[in-house]
Image: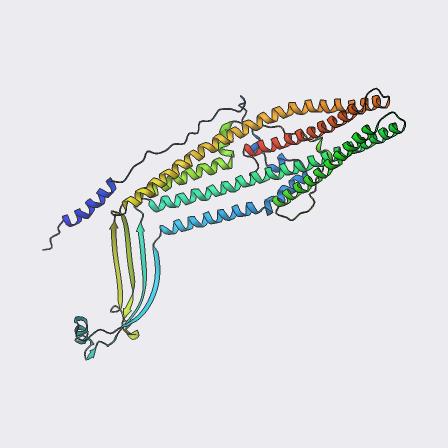
Length: 476
């Protein structure tokens, strides 16, 4: 009668339970999603983030530039390859859940000494009546091997889920690149159109100053002015012409910036600069802050990375638990080719299961577990920081839009007043009721105020682009 000694199995089982009981535990982390309920006391849930960028932007030239950038931009193409890498990582993690099966074939030959136990045994063994074992002894084998780690602690499944979360995070990262790229193209386009208008104003000013210079020269000849006045007007014309070339260089650099975003070599950028003064900033509907969680790609990316980090902690914790591995093999084995396919004599097979728990290298596992938890905490703070940054960006842009609107109205009135003062100063100078210095200062102030008005208009247009991006618009 066969007697089973149960303590033989209780000892390794007890060791495995002891290993599990010593596994470190950490309190689960929860992200703080508490954000203000509204922007500037508005509870309207309509938001421009839901508006497609083709509808949000009205300029057909700008729409064409954005289309080209979305097709050719190298940074976006790099991000798309990152998505492919993350997708392949999912396939790797998924494959780890399945048995690893391989097929192999081998051949060998062995000669053992006659006066050894194996040699003596082989010499006295007959394959068939009257036929001894060959010497030397061949070894031919064709077999299939399988190895499977049973995922009893969900270590491999959690690893696959983490890979899926990181893949989805790269998709959101791509969306964030898209909305940022659209904003960069729009910013540079409005910068270019603004420079065109500034260049036109400088040229008009040069013509006005040149006309004033001719008047001063004529007055000098009539002894109604001095050489000092002539030189002052001459210097002012030279300064304006120098400013013209500075703006031309800025135009070239801005065009190249757009060309870089579009992934193309330098070429002229098509635009309509005439309508710049008539451009009106879009009406901004900000919605409520809670919508940022769904609309901002960078927030969703940070959330998915946090989820992946949490799964990494579970995977690292499972490393402390015993692992069950099953190995198997089946094939044919013989010492001569003509015996290789004789069944069942040449058949070989094996099946084994191993339950193994870490013991000596637990310090390394603890270190990896602690590192995984630290990365989880980093991901948590990054998620909360991303939400905070998103809210502050929108808040700043909404305030900027409001203040720029008031500033533009005042600067428009300033420009109108200075334009009138130029005509008045010119008439008074011709009748010698004011000196040349007042005429120069009036022209200079008018030029500066016109350039500042264009800068303010550009800042308004950029602000509505930025708030569209910050609210999460552009990638849908």
